[in-house]
Amino acid sequence: MNRRRFISNSLSFSSALLVPSVLNLFMGPGRAHAHHHDRPAPAPHPHPPSPPSRTGPTGPIALDFELQAVPESFHVYSDRATEMWRFRVGTVTAGASQLSHIPGSFLGPTLELRQGQRLRVKFVNSITQASIIHWHGLDVPMDQDGHPHSVVGPGDSYQYDFVIPNRAGLYFYHPHPHGKVGEQVNRGLVGLLRVRDDEEDALGLPADENEHLIALIDRRVNADRQFEYMTGGGHDHMMGMHGNTLLINGQTQAPLKVKRGWQRLRIANLSNARIYNLQWSDGRPLSIIGTDGGLLESAETRQQVLLSPAERLDVLVDLSKAKEGDQLSLQSAPLVAGRGSPFDLIQLHCTSEIGAAWTMPQTLCRFDRISESEAINAAPGSEKIFTLGISQQEGWTIDALPYEPGIVRAKETVRFGDTEIWEFDNSGTHLPHPIHIHGASFQVLSRTSGSFTGAFDLGWKDTVLLLPGDRVRLIKRFNTHKGDFLFHCHNLEHEDHAMMRDFRIL
Ligand SMILES: [Cu+2]
Image (cartoon, rainbow, N blue to C red):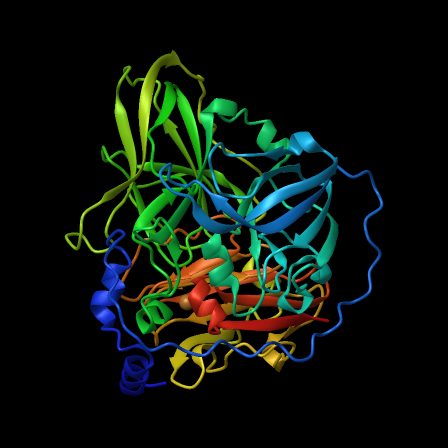
């Protein structure tokens, strides 16, 4: 699509002024403009494909429980309850100690699992819409992945039973019914899932009260303390749903009291659409030890890192030389210096207590780097290219196509066991798109940047940020499960309307 046509399409699609809107994404909450061009909801998927038959796991079950999606009045604010949909724990049959809760948070229970453990979850749908749960970042079989074809209606349930194959890392879960993901997450249906493994244990990383889960969530909170959704009309469809209020772990911001030692921040961007540009308030670099799929080979330092929806960052900070009462803020800076000001995400307040002593090792883990030569399409120019776009008829697209359930093109078909190089091309949309691929984690090979920089590509990734003008090449192994899986933009409003495709592993 040429640039002129793109601009004319996108203007009629949303009336949004593109350049200021892009900048607004990075300027802190509370700057949304109202426009009024609503799009109809997408049609339900017609012919769900049937998953390949498989034998379920047979070993002992580490965690077995009911996870209910329920309407609930919840006190995010003390003065008035917010009407939400939440994930709540029902009957627990095994492993109750592997469910933890962030006190006061509307997030669902945090599932605490180890690599190789078997998880059984009965999802009970007690909301008024069809739904299904996707375990973001976990490499599970097709019928366990929460593909939209698996949705269950109100009053129905879905039994999950799978083994955690992933390395230690911070993962999360959320609904994945096509066209309703943004709304259901906005209402509160999201939770964290933390995986541990022996390799991570051996590092003796800061743990317990020195390890902090930090889910970055923005919501548009109205005067009645309710979460609004898509009240900005076409602008919200264009930009994705940006809130006016930052809720860390779903709560109003409160300082985190920390001991004077090493602290580990497990940061997950669980916002529908907002991108954060992380930095420390005192100018010290971020010390990054992990991303979506767990530990890096060794720690990396950056002054700033962009974290787009669904991306995770594992950050260590050494406060052993801090004094009692010292304060340090994790902030989000504007994407473009001078356009807006940094805002605090979370403040760390040092207490009198001395915390954990620790030394950063040279090497964090044995990192299995995928060589380009492993790919069946390693020859220059033979990568599969997926072009991100927008059109008046289809909304957000991949190769000018919206989501078509169960329909895969030749390039969306992969032979089981193959490794492939995929390239995502965002030279045509002028907006950022965090692209998530279901199944096994991938590695980013290279990035050709457009107008912006700051994405962090190292480690095992399941979501990669395509900034305006960017082209990103990645490599992925398709050697774990056959069947239909999704790849899509994780700006949830882009995903719903309908920047998503199936790919099939045969
Ligand atoms: Cu997008």
